[in-house]
Image (cartoon, rainbow, N blue to C red):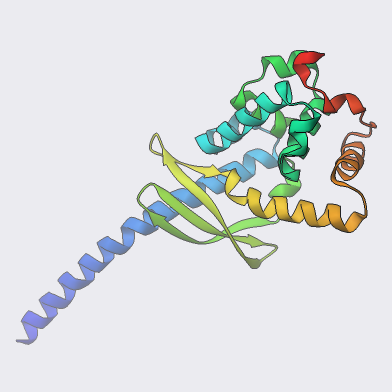
Length: 214
């Protein structure tokens, strides 16, 4: 009887070990994706970082690029403050020729290598607990060692875990809106002041006009 219990116990541990190793293996791959992305950002290597950025993020930048080209001032006013900031900073920093030659992927690479997606966005960030569900995973955001009530999303695409940067855009938009509200300026004034600080160049009202009209 004891021998049977022992054998059963060993088999039980082996099964549990195999079940546990599966998620741990995937969790490690998710973590590796984040670490590789972070390293690429810190080294301004847009071409490397893009390998770990998912199709949802690329689509977002493609959509923003279309707005950069075509959105007039009335349409810009309907955007969230984060989207508005994205459209205006691209118009402010990039030439018409550059914009017309961008696609979603190349725009992300440019944003990384030009500092629009800066090192400070990841310097103090790490990923804590990770939950994997088939081709989706979420990792708790840890900032300067503190666990945050935020989760970064990851999707497995072409057998590679990739980061969905848009999963943090809602909280980013709320934070940006709060800062604008507290500044005493309207959103456009606040964005213009940020653009001047970021670029060292005062933005022109021309950036409210669609690129395709220039």
